[in-house]
Amino acid sequence: MPRSLSNPTVAHQPKPAVKAKDRDPVAAGMRDAAFNRSASFNYFLSDKFEAGVALRGTEVKSIREGKANLKDAYGLLKDGECFLLNAHIGPFSHGNAMNHDSLRTRKLLLHKAEVRKLEALTRQKGFTLIPTRLYFRKGRVKCELALAKGKQDWDKRETERRREADKEAKAAVARSQRR
View 1: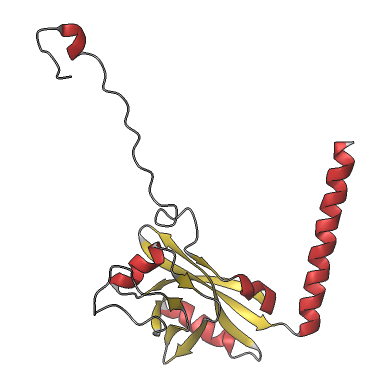
View 2 (view 1 turned 135 degrees about the horizontal axis):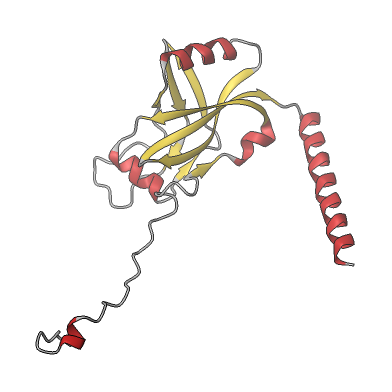
């Protein structure tokens, strides 16, 4: 119904509130775009670093769609630069012939001091860089790298035993509080 200027009661009625469409939680930075679940199972994770990732436009769009996988990915330091290898970012659904390669090597953007620190830490025997998650911060894709040392099979079993014991203890506490 069009507003009537002659009728003052109609002209001064407030417009109905229209809910703004919420942003995608991944794009808004409220949820991780990709998470490496096997990292904490296969490695002891210690220091964590945040790095920017040099990406192409179709890669960013694919990450927003949730097509990123860090399962087999790792970080590599070479010639004072840091790279992300084996990170799978699926092709963009509306991409054309110029779509990106899924497993290409991507450059990680770190300060020189951070790269020097990482080089010193990864020279120690058994340490490597493992990406633990991809997420958005202020519209930019960030990668969380963790300094990691590989677990042996017995370490993995011990971690599983500890997790199971914690789970049982929480269940027992919850049962006793219900009574």
